[in-house]
Length: 302
Length: 316
Image (cartoon, rainbow over all chains, first blue to last red; front, side, top):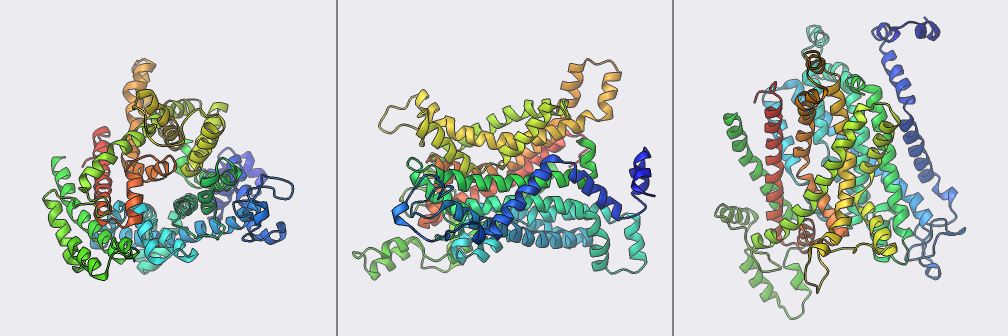
């Protein structure tokens, strides 16, 4: 059956879906590609990613090289985004800053995804006392004022990149745990799970091979939106002076420095913040597109 | 229902104990205590420091300090600020009002924009208007407050000179309503923009969900006017997820306030927390953490109750 005949059948999707598992993903990909904002988001993130990776090839300047004779220069041909209070080239620092934002966003979300999936699946699958204890623990963690814990933990552990990533990650797993638990609760009494259990599959096999794959679309959507949140958290912390410390080129730190020179040099505030905004927005576009593409319940309501 | 609320309130106590104990231990672990400020002063000897530590009770082991704090709290005594030498409750009370004013107004304006816009967007699904509003909503939601605030100051204070950059009043002037309003416009707009972007998407989604339901067709079929259908059947059902979401997000208003208050030098809880954290003012920090935690737990409860009240299918 080729694509052409499929397209001519009115209910082709209904007939194809049970035939092969891959078809679900392929049709999701098609829906994602048909979503204009998500394509824009993907393109935008790719550009920002490439800019960070290729930064040394794109710019002739060093991110931390100061040049006191050229302090607070407005944007020009030599300095596309102007220079900051120490004469550092702003465009260069923006490029290097994308490395930090994206790596913090992706790595800390990876941590919270693993933690959340682990805790959510144990609670959802085993139920009973495990469920009760783990969910109470999740409630407590959610009730902790997050900013407060972030400020104190970073004060306690220092402000290195790895610390910021780990601390942001271990404070963001709770929604994921609730989501995975809810998905597993909804799935675990279904026939195919009972069949797997009767066939003698171990709990860990049932969870990893049968339950999680069926919950994967929600997990993917939540992860992509969580990355946007992590990028925002890192730049917010750095803006408050609690994230990465100077002279590291982090967009939040640059924004913090810009506050003292809004009148003589507004560009030092405009560009770093614009990058935070664009990165968060592009990731949100991707997440939105993924939701439309992967979540069948959501499609009905769109 | 009453039974459910009582059970939840009982569960509240251990949660609160864990949170306050956790925060207390975390505070103990952070290097540099409230006494650290004085070690820089050459006029203060080591003996003075010891006496201060003793006077503040900081020489006791952590668990003793925690139990003392808890004991006093049970008597309604939130302690004294180590820096300002005033009762914590007085300080918090001064700041709470201005935070509620700012955060409440921001949320209110945001909702007043997002409810009609989201509803209209759902009615005209896939129209140009729908496309524009959903995109704008995503943009508004993606704007970090600490940037949109700075941009607002650059444009409206530095360039146009329409509004002041920060504070709640002009210092050294008799406070007037117009002066207060002029100081309110920028921070509230920045907050409202974020909330509007966030809630418009949810309002649209939940109205769409309701519009597709069979009970609306039934309501129309039995001869109700379109207005009755909307007000009696659609609005109530579409409101359920929104009310729940607003209640769940209430504590987040404080986190948002931290950035807004920092940028616009607004004398609220967010900045109080920030100053206390920087100066290691333990009693103030503990009070703020406890209050926020209580708010989080209560708003979770309110969300669940609102859900049950609005949706007869949910049994508590």
